[in-house]
Amino acid sequence: MANTKWIAALAVGAVVCLTMLGMRTQAAPGTAAAGGSVSKAEAQLIATTKTDSKVKGTIWFEKTSHGMHVHGEITGLTPGEHGFHVHEYGVWNEDGTASGGHFNPTGAAHAGHDSAKRHVGDMGNVKADENGKAIVDLEDDQMSFEGPTCILGRGLVVHAKADDLKTPPSGNAGGRLAVAIIGVAKP
Ligand SMILES: [Cu+2]
Ligand SMILES: [Zn+2]
Image (cartoon, rainbow, N blue to C red; front, side, top):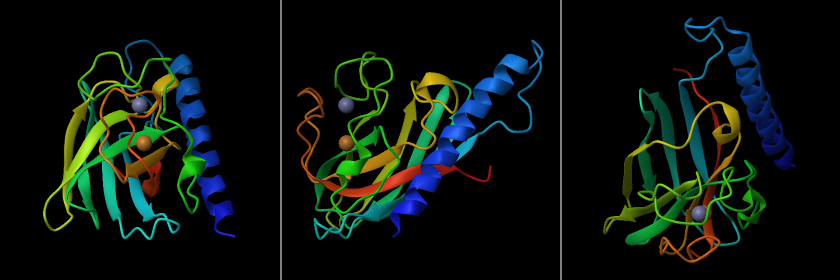
């Protein structure tokens, strides 16, 4: 079953995050992070099968001086807005529910990406054009590659409907059209 692949990827992500924590405590003050530090992650969206989704795409997360640059392209959408979040688990299944709820290590309420208090995974909506293509290009100041807000090994989800940016627990964004596992990428 393909599921073992996803479980393996999740385990790798968890180990990476833990390793980062260990390295931080061991690094001498003022020195640059050791060779194992992660600066870039990649998430390849896989369409969910129960929804007859044709959604796919690749999203990159790149560390910047003030947080994370999230960018990429998604195709196969219906025109308009679609909820776009990091979810708790890096697990794909046929309807996307195995990815769990929004990644929320700070115990905040659901909100939009611009809110200071929100789920760490709240990235609001992507907007697809008339051809069903959405360009993702946003700056984030809450996600990281280490510590409690580490997104490595978590899930990335694209929804059927728009996130209203307020309704708990997930903005009433409907079904899950595609799920990706956020993994370490070649810098
Ligand atoms: Cu979501
Ligand atoms: Zn949320």
